[in-house]
Image: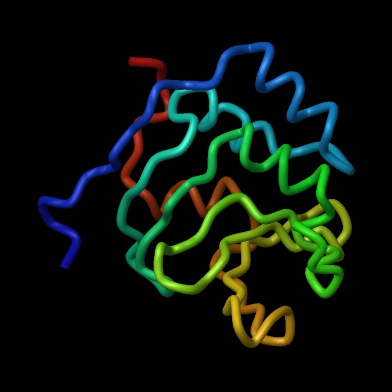
Length: 136
């Protein structure tokens, strides 16, 4: 199903942008997430599990969402949204779970009650996408 579909990479975030996101986050972000942004500050690629696609938000988009409190959507408190599937679902860290932030998908209409775990942590989530984590 995923053969021939690759990660569409954007230029990586600068060290200053990654540091600003690290400072803006409510807690310590997974290092693997920050590494991904440093090689692809946004991008798109397939997932072999639901929601079957990742549209990665740039560090700047994530910082804007953090500054606005998820754009005023208080029902999304406890989630750090870092992307979506391009078709009505967010991809987010569930920060309510303590140190181990699972990656979840959330239906944009149904809201947080629809949250389903995609991966138990970001390292395992990265294993699902076909992206080279090294700088080009």
